[in-house]
Image (cartoon, rainbow, N blue to C red; front, top):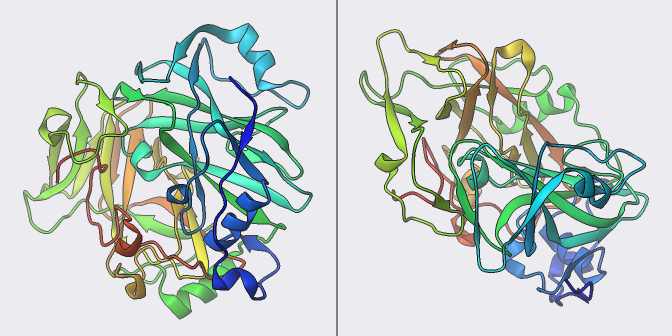
Length: 384
């Protein structure tokens, strides 16, 4: 593969020419465009496009080859990803025209984008919402990295995606977007006190009870639904056809999912290693000058993991962006033992972090966002 850098020029917006609201925080869309023009993030072979820029993140794309590896790994501070691939890769897979990544296997894919961060710039990654709803476990790794999904300050080098389909085998190709990256200037800390103040002003989550914010804003699961016997979730089937990650509104949900209906007890026993799509009891709001991240798992909450895809963009659920009433869809997987989940049980927590400025584009229908005003919803690959 050629290492020639390719970039694309974006016109400046009005917000870029004015002063920043804050000196630290997550970078909004207009600053991400400036980052691209300055080649702090650049690409090989295929230019970065405006379509990749989200209100507070940038979509990253798969490169032309995937490496099937024997085990997940972190390179550690003294090694490059390539060093580990030489020891762990079993074979290469050409993604130029598309290839299937099999469930239960682990792959590492060099991404088209690479970065050259300064001292005060760092990054955090997460799977895109549609990636998580397919139970495709995706994490970002870097050379000399000792953490998943983190790009440390002053890092200069390539980016890689570790991909492990857990439920469905998936068809991907060069340019497929499974991962998103947020950039942060400085090290602002989201505190419970600050989030409580923001909640009092904005009502970050609604609900029947007042919320005590500890370690983030609590989110509970809805197992009551609108009526007894009504749909409250989906359970993935064990043996299905592959899913093309770039094909939307195409697949029949009944071929891949079993419906879960509300019962008198308002609970659900999670089967070990099964994958579920559920929904929060509360509607979630992200104000225009903040972004949110949902913690993937807290061991004190039970023997399960909730929410693989953790980013909530500014404007999600915000009435000014057409999103009043948007609820959080939860990707839930039990571990080695069956686990009883009760209606109203806390399953995850949202952490809110300020942006350096209000984005020039908010999450919502105006930019083609898929999940504004959502309730219980499968990924956009399935027919509504």
